[in-house]
Structure formats: C-alpha cells, structure tokens
Length: 151
Image 1: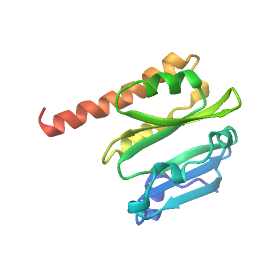
Image 2: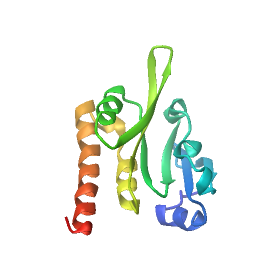
Image 3: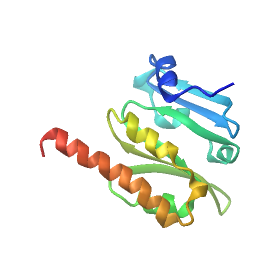
Image 4: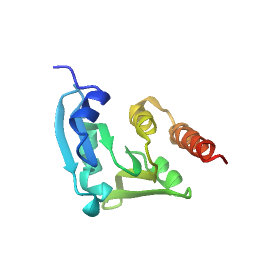
C-alpha cells in the first residue's frame, strides 16, 4: 500500500491541532498521535521517544505554532539549541545521547515543516553540514516572515 501524501494527511487530520504520523522504513504507517485540545496542547504530547526513531521515521507533523523535527545527532541538537528562538528536549540513556526533538515558533509553516522532515540524516557526513541545512531552512522562513511584515 502506498503511503499517503502530505496533502492527503493534511486533509485527514484537518480537524486536529496537533498530529504526528510515524512510518516504518517501508513506508507503512505504524503510529499516529493526536492532540485536539489546544488549551491543553503541548507539542511533546505527540512526539515519541527518539529511541523509537531508529525503526520509525516522522513522516508528517502538524502544530499550530511550531516547526518540529527530530535528530539523532548530539552535535546538531547542541548547536541548534544554542540559537535564540530554538527549543528542544534531548534524551539520554545514562551518559549516552539517544536523540532530541528540536522546535521553533512558526505560524503557517507547512512547507518549512516538510523541508525539515525531508532531510535524511544518514545522507550527511558531518553534523555541521546537517546543521547548516536546517539553519538555511529556518533562515529562509525568518526572511519571509520579515518580508510579509514589511520589514
């Protein structure tokens, strides 16, 4: 069965404020997490523990005011979390880094969100290279927001 497109998932989950869809490496949906009550909404409610991201990948995520994506690279998480406006949570097993969720505020950022999720960490040789791509996506959005505000 072919995995649903981003547009199909948006349509299916249009009534929900926060959604995350996780697929296995064959493209089969394995987990769907939903939060529909915005007053109780916390982005972390629909994000799974990063240890599961070794066998699953986040294929779709929708938040009303955030862009979110995972990383399994400590260097990427550490350097992006140092930037003003970036938030996240890192997970450890004892002293060993397991993974992190990285978030930043963004309204109406469907394409920005999709661009972050389309990156495949295994295709990048260095943390610096991957970090720079995430930053370029973020900076393009910031520039667009400034242009829309007339600044």
